[in-house]
Each structure stands twice: as C-alpha cells, then as structure tokens.
Length: 314
Image 1 (tube, rainbow, N blue to C red):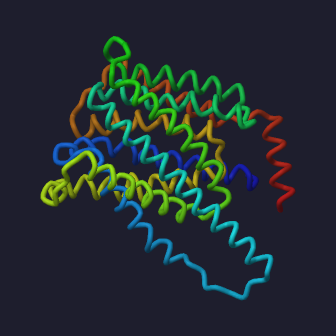
Image 2: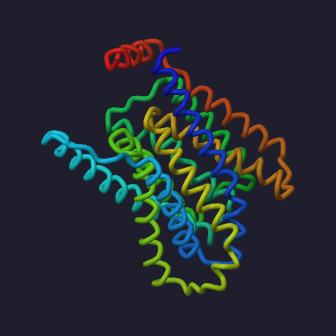
Image 3: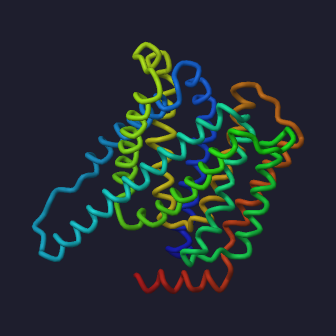
C-alpha cells in the first residue's frame, strides 16, 4: 500500500470517528436543552472544547530554534493563516449551530436533521465553483446519501414550514465550513486551528447569550454532564478529527462520510433511549452506508495522478 492510500484511509478513519461521536451526542444535546437555552449551551460547550485542547497543544509544542529570515517569513504566513482560519471556521460554526437551534424551536428534529444533512449535496455543488470536480462515483454516493437520509429522518409528510428556512441556511453554512476546513487544514496545525475556532464560536455565543437569553449558574451546573460530554467529545475531539481527516480527504467525500452522523444518531437512540428502528429507517441507514462506500472509490485515472503526485513529493 503506497503512502497516498495510507493517508486516504487515515483521513477517512478520522472522519468516520467524528461522525460516530457527533451521532452519539444528540442524546446529550437533547438532555442539555432541558436545563439551559441554546446559545448558553453552545457558549459553554465550545469554551470547554477549546479548553481541553490547550494541554494537547502544550504537550506537542516544539522548542524554538534559530530561524533564518526565510523561516521567520514563513512562520508569519503560517500564523496569519492559523488566525484567519480559526476565525472563519469559528464564525461559520457559531452561525450554523445557532440557526439550527432556532429552527428546532419551530420544526421537528427529524426534518431538521434531514435539512441540515443537505450539505451532502451542497458541498460538491459549491465545490464546482472552486474547480473541485467530483467523480461519477461520488455523485452516485450523494444521491444514495440524500435518499437514505430522507428515509432515516423523515417519517411525516414533507412540507416546508416556518422553522425550515433557518435550518436550510444552516446546511449552507455548514457546507462553507467544510470547504473552509478543506482550505486551511493543509496549511496549519489542525489542533491549533480547532482550538481557535472553538474560542471564537464561544465568544460569539456568549455575546448572543447575554443579548437574547437569561443564563444562570445553577442551570448551567445542572446541565454539566451533557455540557462536558458535548464539549470534550463533540467539540474537542470530533471537530479536531474533522480537521485532521480533511487534510487528506476532498470536501465532497467528507460531506458524504458525515452523513453517517444520522445513522449513528439513530443507533444510539435505539441503544440508549430504547427508540425503535423501523424498516424504513433501517433501509435509509443501509443507503447511507452504500453512499459512504461509493464515495471512497477513486477512478483509475485520478488514482494514477494522485500516486504520481505522492511519488513526486517523496
């Protein structure tokens, strides 16, 4: 197995485990909303997500060495990319999660989950404007993913209501967040990028929290377990996995793998909350799994080109 294939498998594994963690946190998020309001929840969990990454950054920090003028200039560019990347990704996460929570007030969780997951379609379409042409296998994967997500999430008649527009905009913003990570993750340290985006999202959520909500420490303490779970796992670990995985995975492929989040959410709902999975939902989950497998197929011509590029770097 060549280096290119190894990196691709490693990237897909990171994205798979990110989806697994995100799917498991729906239960914790639901529990957290019993105690505190959406922006309060986001402000605290994003702060925890950034906080838990600080020791990791300190642990792997390298001792400074004598730098040439060229190295100093490169370091300045890297720092600028890191700050801008963290700010851009943080703003996008804040906006997407905020709109999703607003939409959930007026629409069902199933419909919100399906509409949010439409980034599976939006990412490859937007990517076309950035000259990121998906393979035919990926387009088939997108079609299977959307169909599967519909069967998995939608059990009622599909009509657009008042709360659906914010969730649709949320899906669009998540698409840009995936593309932003694709742009910045190869340029900077993934853990540092993840840390900055969380603190940015936390600051913005905190400002919004004080403007529109009435937070109190007693309620926040009551929600401490869901906050710790989502802050450490869904933010600190899963979003970092996303950044590390997208270093070697095209954004359109990543978006299809992220479709597994809905599958894992249904599985954890069955395991933890004893929610029953219908034949319709199992069929939808199967289609999403097929979509992920299709998204991993690389046409021979593109595979040869990637192999040559990898060899040239060696």
